[in-house]
Amino acid sequence: MTTAKRIDGKAKAEQLAESITEQTAALLAEHGIKPGLAVVIIGEDPASQVYVRNKKRRAEACGFHSVQHTLAADTAQDDVLALIDDLNNDDAIHGILVQLPLPDHLDEQTITQAISPSKDVDGFHFVNIGKLTAGHTADAFVPCTPAGCILMIEDELGSDFSGLNAVVIGRSNIVGKPMSALLLQRNATVTMTHSRTKDLPGVVRNADIVIAAVGRPDMVKADWVKPGAVIIDVGINRVEKEIDGEMKSKLTGDVDYDDVLSVAGAVTPVPGGVGPMTITMLMFNTLRSARLSAGLEG
Ligand code: NAD
Image 1 (tube, helix red, strand yellow):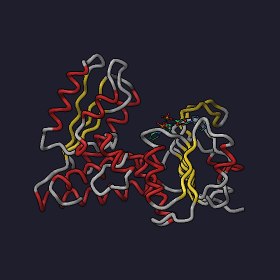
Image 2 (cartoon, protein in one colour):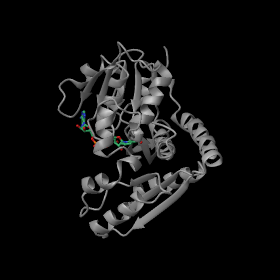
Image 3 (cartoon, helix red, strand yellow):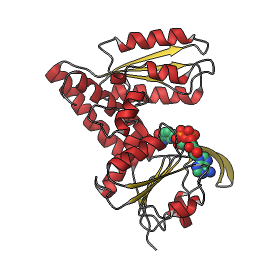
């Protein structure tokens, strides 16, 4: 029985982070520019606090100017917008990120669209979404999770997916939709699927590339998978599992990893797959923004 390759997202992310750190040092030495990342967190969501801490740590490790703005959960929307306006006008800041989800009284769309498209390193601004959809990515920011996924797929299949079928499961604005645009740009034949799709296993069985971004633990099984397919598991689900006779809380993806190993060609694990790449792509986008601001790219 063959066993699929485990795609090591953690190792790839570390390699990429090393290169970002080197390029950051060179940008400072040659042009006097230090990439600046501002992260805004509003409220006390514990998972968001962990994400923000990790982003700050990674930004500092890359040699960035890293700023965190922590606002109270009841901060008025106008005050959030005023802070974003200040950051948009701050030359030391090249990337602005507002950690989601936001407290209920704040309007996510108004806030994400207030970030200047040229500092929108999350790639959520309509200008960046439009550029990506039009295939004009030279000066656009691509959302970090799909950007990391595509690099992992390219490692397995090269950069031209002509003749390959790709199935994206989940149609969110931050993962599914931009993912399908990136796959299409590389000539894959793309099928977007979602909760209303008929016979999802049958559709996935045609796929040479599968992206699972749903939020349902272990949903994709071996009998959904075409032999040799490359499977990227974006899902992050916390589940209770029995480990050594004890119930423990554990992270799992949308793909039943052990089950698909005997059929797939390559699979990302959870944890250690897409997650570490996502945070590194945020650093990639911030460095890129700093270079674009100096006319060094684009
Ligand atoms: P979301 O929660 O916004 O949307 C889920 C999508 O799944 C929807 O489009 C829905 O139509 C689809 N869906 C729901 N049930 C389905 C079913 N039974 N069959 C087929 N499709 C179904 O999605 P999101 O924000 O893209 O997040 C998806 C998962 O990815 C979550 O587990 C999230 O935690 C994870 N995530 C991980 C990272 C990372 O860096 N690893 C980043 C973003 C999201």
